[in-house]
Image 1 (tube, helix red, strand yellow):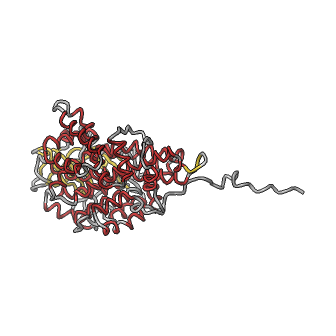
Image 2: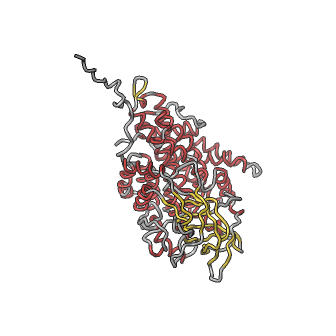
Length: 554
């Protein structure tokens, strides 16, 4: 008689999984982010925070996480022609893309803030955009462009009245149909061309006047235009009077499709959910927005709004990354104990956390400035603060996300973790809406042409004066740097100046508003010291308090 083999012990049964962190899902993304909730209460109200709770819960759900993965695993598909050879230029998106878009629009993250009577509408929208972007970053692009189009459209009252209510709608209504038949619309932007890139004055696309006042036809191309299925685009082209901004509807009022050829979709580094296209124009009907020759000045308000969203998006990537990292080490054991209890890992997580918190605090401060458009200080601070934050926060995101990924070890290197997508996406916002050099030079431009922006900056950082001697010393060093730069050398020093101004502004905000442990660690490492991008080198900080503050709780 044979003896049955003994049951496999749990230690050797590979079907029993031990010591793996559970999925980070089922939490509220808004309330789990202490820096974000405090900023909402500071710049908004308790009612503002309350209005975001449903969004935060949905953003943290396992369902939303799965839709984010599916939208990226199933890329958009371009169909240039129908079966009969007719040009249709349609892009099909996976159902998960539409799921994400429907909820983003429904939560008011597109242009609803511009039509709201809520005094904190842009703070609410910014916080919601940051939290919802945890689900998947790619669909934030059409949401952002729709938000940003409204202030530019105000250059022409009839065009603004025609489009703003549709862009501000909370109804997601995809498909190529006349705008007047839709419940809501989405906007896009086309500025750059093959030969010029950020140098839009080198654009060659020609706008030819028609017999109808204010209408033109375009002849040329655009090198990068995201979300080509959107309903309307703001584009730049060379009119007889110079570079001019135009409104380009995807479908004309009579129901016919505008002459817009989608040449191909870009194979990009980052997200694969969104469609970024190359477009060609040959008789494409457009409407002039603003005066001829004033194209950059007209579209600059759209650029300013999308730059804010670049900062918000990068801050969101940072927060999602440190959330995943802190969650993992709180549930994973190695070398005799929890990773979160290991002094060096605690140092790394705390360092990542203060980087994230500084980004969030600065981003929300700039969003609050949008809610006060008639306040001279707020307007000037927004003018200088946006290129500073766009340069600094977006520039620091890739290294920060890479370190967070490393905290998960090999688990962070596989696509299912979501970390590789964050890592590929991390450089995006530093490239879009003006690269690092473009934004650093914009800081110089603002300082040289608009003296009120330096006054606003100094007033803002001055509100923390006397609270931390190291911050005061960093401010004095910055003033010396500003005073020592000669006109001939300023361009070569633009990055050094922009980075220092941004870090001092972040430090001043944290000293005023963050818990002492966070503010102390930031000032010690970023201002009194020189943080070289290597995380986990904090000294003398209350690391435990910082890690506890940043780790999500279900």
